[in-house]
Image (tube, rainbow, N blue to C red; front, side):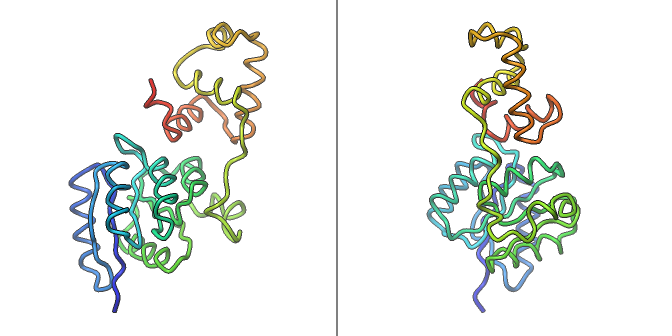
Length: 216
């Protein structure tokens, strides 16, 4: 029987070792490599061509969102399964939008992870039951879940959100961009509405996933 070849991308060594033990105990799964950050994961994926890449979201050097986006471009046959502690709908939506085939929480039992790996290895989609209910009407049942993207925001709206995530006030942003404070507020409101955001915390979370915070 041909084994499912898995690459683990996780920045905590203890978690990586634990995952290796859990997965190696399965007769149909083989761990072919592990990486401590997104960049290393992409390099290994290009060399090893794994069937499934377990991808943590919060990692140094390059986060899981950016790594997934780049990995799907260079290794389209490798299926990405997000393995994270984040229950937030925003993280789930972002990961699926860049091509992840599944999303599993670290808080779930090992059996959930193993089931998810087997599912995505066959080309299927998998959402952890804890988060599936949040998106059942938005993602499940659509024919091209992994290819769906968030609504696009304009360059100016992105510029405003980026500056907000870096801690600038509306007045600071208005001065920087040579706009009125009211116009800045309009761009902010429009962008947040498009992306389904409700607070400044959502903006910061989005900024982290987009890699904007790495530019500060």
